[in-house]
Picture 1 (cartoon, rainbow, N blue to C red):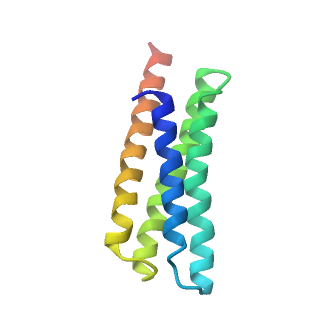
Picture 2 (picture 1 turned 120 degrees about the vertical axis):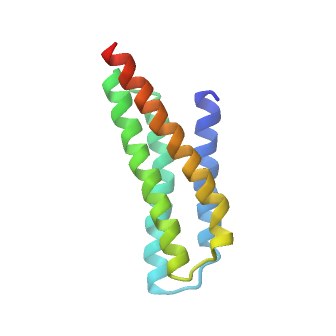
Length: 119
């Protein structure tokens, strides 16, 4: 998978999160969780994109590290959504699966980039 395909996956995940939040009932907790998950999902995509413009290997790794944290946070909010009964596990499962795969790819990319620096 190339960078463009990976970036497209992060964008698609963010858009799927936005679609999911439109199903939530209106309440104070849904407003807070909606804001947080949209922020973390879109930040995953934005920071993955920014990593491609890293000024150095260390900058590249740092930006990927932020994408990693944001993607993990998205997974956290997906769990909270189910626990708060804003959506079902079945509704969140495809996004959780994609976020988990994206997270694994990002972690692998960080490890590869770090190995290249030290060799």
